[in-house]
Image (tube, rainbow over all chains, first blue to last red; front, top):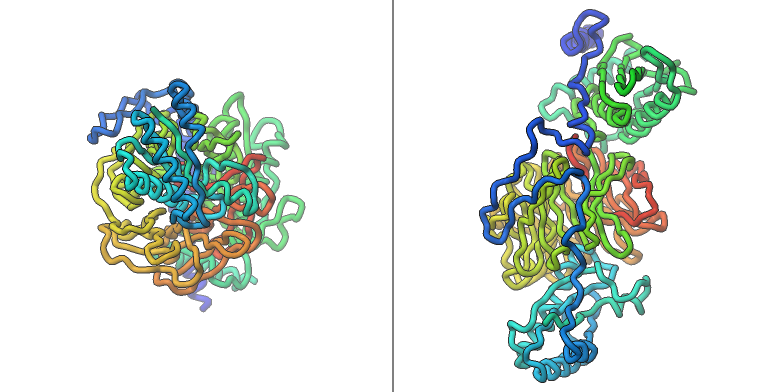
Length: 205
Length: 409
């Protein structure tokens, strides 16, 4: 045991010697200088100026945007929340008449009430054949936000499928899920949650 | 006393020479190593008590997080300590030098020593670097403290991505588009993130280089382009898309080219996470009714259910060592963080207070970060992989969630 311990000490010492050198002065190993490039995100790490990336292969993808002078800051130029585009008073009126529908927790099933509201919405849309509608699926705050992203999608698609069955042209209907990210009302009780588990119908054209 | 320490060192030495160099921090530890942090002193020039205090406090915080040490500060004195950490500094104009040494008091030998040079702003970075080095010197596995934490902050109804130090200091804004930005995930290099943003209307996936600010929208198919997860080699990204009718898991290239579709099920398939060797993915599916965890091979084959208890299990993340998976389970009162063995055994609940979600492992697997509402406002917390030492990390008054911890910057 004693020998083993000494052996261990010897090996450890050797390791220490190898990694830190012999002379007392050299014991401090000068680490790779903590350069500004590596540590301060406001400075590009590469010596060479950043080059724009190659265009992406997929047609839907886009090339990297040009480098910005303040790397960690993103400009707001050209970006804004997408607001419903109400075109004209007819559109605004239709927007006001389209009914939201509501869901049970962790469900995308259409209730009887939802079906009759969707039938009314289909009639309204039949009266304005040029109107296009974005169906926005939403969830309450309780579930997993990631899972609810897909659940919101499913809720929007359930309404779309039903409207298509009622004769609305599929190309007039688009869907988007906001998951838990756009509650209609704040609040942490069943009254609030029930209002947030919904599809909204937004005129986009 | 000396014998015990030698035995401890012998174990440490063996571990540090083992190929994976890992101390299982969930293993019972008979006696914690006593680590004494000596007051920081001036190498040259005037004493700067503020610099010294900041450095010592940082080291005390970092090294107190793993279960290896019992850390005592300058007030305690070095008597009885197994290890002494000495630090010193010098400030010459705009050049800061910090020297740190870890000394085995019983053997009177230096275990490691480093000198860091930089600007005064980099003091904390230097401290974290030596905390990482102390863990490397003693266990063979570097600490995670020089990594950054990306997370989502709610700002006036919108959500923006931020990055902060591993101890919650130095928050920096990454996105500023006034829209909804979600699910940041670091590339293995730690220098890029992918995230989903509604800034152009549809939830699209973006890849962004943090240092250059270069950004590309890499996935913008109709419907969801969300929950992107870099493969361990950084060459592929698993993501959720709904372009083919319902939410399914796909692999795309870094540039956004579709490589393969992994799931084909009418149920919801979301939240993919890679095994550390890149051979498998764990994900969430409600194909059997309620959301549960499933594991599949990286080509979509051999799907098997992982969780069999709990009605609602979500947001899995594979540990870097590969043996466990962290996830959140919804119960009466909210979500709690669990870990489970990759064979579905040994499920263990780690949190119990408040609503706890979005678990992510530190790159060394020692810790799990997560978001919790236990303090009132949702904030980022850290705990050991066994659930002990639950510690608030984010310090702002904002609502913070979805943390993810990068490799060393």
